[in-house]
Length: 146
Image 1 (cartoon, rainbow, N blue to C red):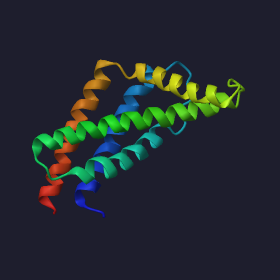
Image 2: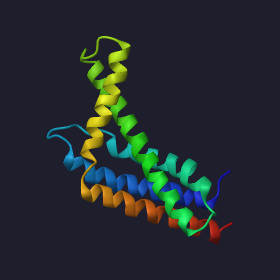
Image 3: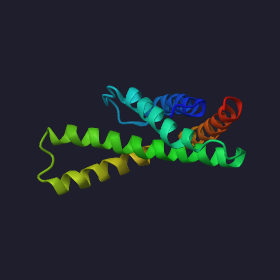
């Protein structure tokens, strides 16, 4: 059911996904074509905000911060998974994989490589602060517009 807390959480995580995407792009290899990278991550932010963060609002400030951090962790997980799958399909079109098991391992390998790129202090700090603020904004919306 649509609620104000779900809407606020979706908007907050979409904005956070945009900011994080803009921070990640300079960390990637030179000449990489990003295509719809930012838009895909923002859609994931909307979905994670709506389903994960927005549905758990109304449990207090401490739970709100934890809820926001959980939302960011889910956003990072799904972002890595979706982007790794996209990269795997791109590599599969160039006949890099010989079978389905190599494809599954390729997704894990590519996701791990992308995950290492995220281990930059500014990205980690932005994710933590943005997640906490998103959780608090969601809690505020739940209390304000029940």
